[in-house]
Length: 144
Image 1 (spheres, rainbow, N blue to C red):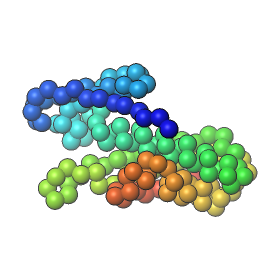
Image 2: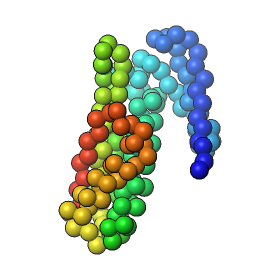
Image 3: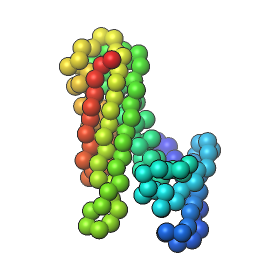
Image 4: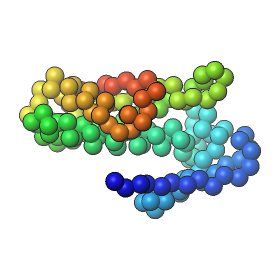
């Protein structure tokens, strides 16, 4: 199985510094990061580890759900997945406190219960969910 790589170049202190995250394996881009913007409500054009985790989790979950729907005898027509990763405080330190997965799907061959079962199996089986098992992960899944 492949290994994927990203790198970050950081300059300065935590509060005054900034960095650039490069998606090295795919070479699709370099993105600005900053701790003050990471903890602000408005990201103001920068990304954060939490946003990158949200991207990874939503993509992984969508792939896992597509697989689970197929195993259950359905055919996914369209899946819209979002992941909301919350940065909070725990023991006085910044901590990822929760992840909320939301999926809406158009699926042939599965009813609402079958879709729910496939979504729960995808949540448990997704490699990113497994890697983030220490975080409270919720799921809101429904057919359109």
